[in-house]
Image (cartoon, rainbow, N blue to C red; front, side, top):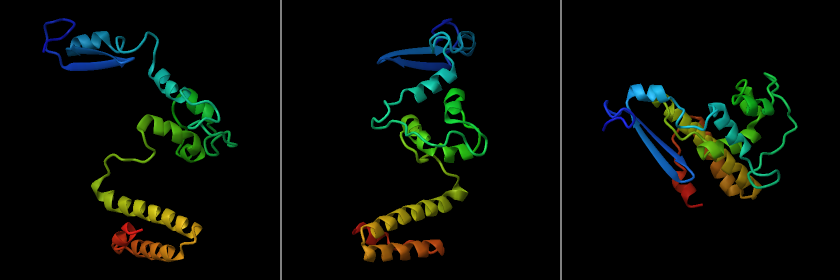
Length: 180
C-alpha cells in the first residue's frame, strides 16, 4: 500500500480517527507522517492535557449516579497536591495521592479503563503470590459478609480457608464455596 500523501513510498504508519461515528483512515510513509505530525488527528490547539482534562470534566452532575464524591481531604497529606491540582496538571504528586483521592479516582479509572482492578499481564515470578493475595482479599470480604448476615457456619468455613491460605496450603474449599 502506498502513502496516501506522497503516493510514492510504502505506507508504514496507519491512523484511524473516529469522530461522531465518522471514521477517517490515513496510511502514511514515515516521512509524510513526520511532516504532518499529529495535526490531522486533533483539532488545532488540542494538546494531550486537553484530552486528559476532558475525561475529568465529563462527569455526571453532583448527586447523580457516578458523580464524584466530595471529600473533606483537600490536599494530599504527603505531597500537598490537591485534587483540583491533579485535574489541572493531569498527574498525581506521589503514591500517597492514590490513597488520599481514592474515592475521586475510582470513577475516573472506571471511565478510562472500564474497571478499577488490574487485568493485564502479571510477571510470572509474582503471579502465584498475587493470585493468593487476591484470593485472601476476596475470602476476607466474603467472611465479613457472612458475619454480617450471622451465617456463622459459613464464616467458620471461610475463616479456616483463610488460615490455610495464610499458612501456604492450597485452597481446598473452592468446591464447598461453589455450593453456597
